[in-house]
Length: 187
Image (cartoon, rainbow, N blue to C red; front, side, top):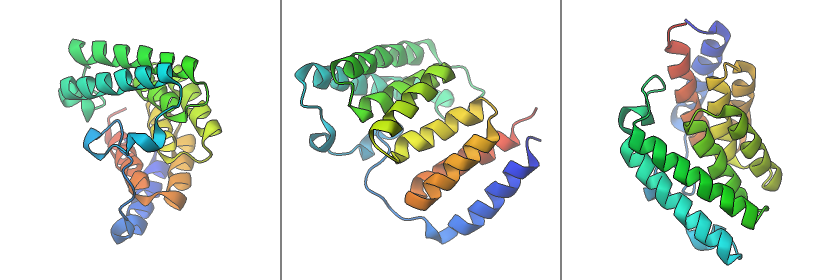
C-alpha cells in the first residue's frame, strides 16, 4: 500500500465529490479530443504557432489512439508508435511555444507530452509556465498533479487536487481517480 494519508484524502474527497460533480466546458483536450474546446477561442494569432499547435494536436490524437493499455495503466509500456507520436507532438508543441511564448495551451501540451514520455522534470516546468500564463489553468493543474504522483510527491498531488476542487470538480474527480489508482499500486 502507498500512503495512508493519501488514501484518507482520496476517500474524503470522493465522498465530498459524490453527486457534486458538475459538467464543465470541454476540458479534455488531450485525453479526449472529442471534448476539445473550440479552437477559435484558443488559437494563436501567430501563423507559425498555429501551424505547430495544429500539428501537435494531430500527433497527440495519433498517440492516444496508439497508446492502448498505456493510456490508462501507469505500469503498461508505451507502444513504439505511441511514443513516436508523442515525441512528434512534443516537438510541435515546443515549436509553438517558441513561435508564441505566451501560448498557455502549447505549454500545457508540452507538459502533457513530456509527462507521457516520462520526462517529469520537463513536464513540471511546462505546466508551471502554462499556469503562470493562465492563472489557475485547471487542465495544467490536473496534469501537473498526475506528474506529481509519478514522482511520488503526494503532498503536491493533494494540493493540486484541493486547488482543482475549488474551481473544477470534474477535473478534481479525474485527479482523484488517478490518486486512487496510484495509492493501490504495489510498493
